[in-house]
Image 1: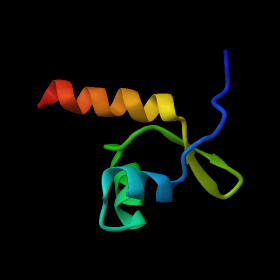
Image 2: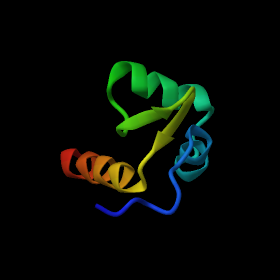
Image 3: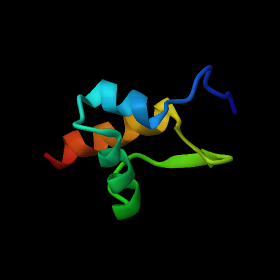
Length: 62
C-alpha cells in the first residue's frame, strides 16, 4: 500500500468543489453522503483517491 504524499483537508474540498463553507463538508460527514474521511487527532482528513472514487460514484448515479 502506498500512502499519498498529502491528504486533503475540509478546506481543500471547499476550494476544489467551490462549496459555500466548510460546514457543508461536515454536514456530508454527519449524513454519510460525502467522501470517506478519517481523523488524525482532532483533524479531519481525506485521501485524494477516496475523493476521486466518491466523485466517480456521483457521476455514475447522475
